[in-house]
Length: 246
View (tube, helix red, strand yellow):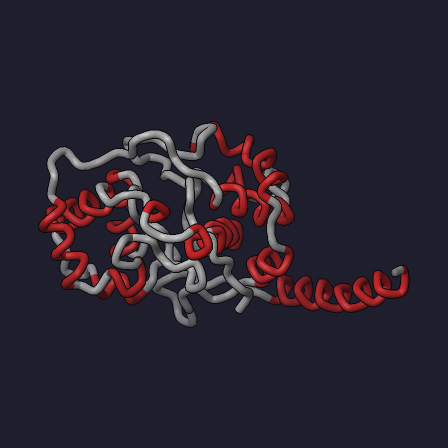
């Protein structure tokens, strides 16, 4: 047993050294800048994915996030802070590490996710915990039901190819769950992605929504906000599919 443990330590040590060296040499690139690649694996994100996460520890670490995202992680209906319950762990890890790396522009969240507020070891734990939760509060929706028009825009612009026909996203490809998200949050983030001010915009999404008007954004956001929680129409195994380091 001791010999096996020694072998594991010997194997892991070079890997940790490699990640640390890569992190020192890494220069983040944001959307609109030469060399930007959406979903590029940062050294920290790679290490977090390799470490995995413990939802039990994550529940404790999440206490520092409750001021904004609330104790049940359902955010606020106005959409200032998003619903995080049931979000894919791979997506949460991507977003947190990209904020820490300076790729995603989120000055409000940065102080709460950068070291030492949250250690790198806690990122995977928090993501694992949040991915297991189910929201018990109703999410925020638009002032009027625009589901029919929003669904047509969502379908015609092939948004389902990334976000899924039921808004379930794709854990393996780091596409977020958008079903049952707050209307206000969806509206704001789509506009920021189109404008490129978010920092980590997906060029494919920017192209898809490039001609959207304010009314178009509102219709799509309303449609997605009214979709049922994707976990009610998918199996737990699919919903919690872990991502692998690329």
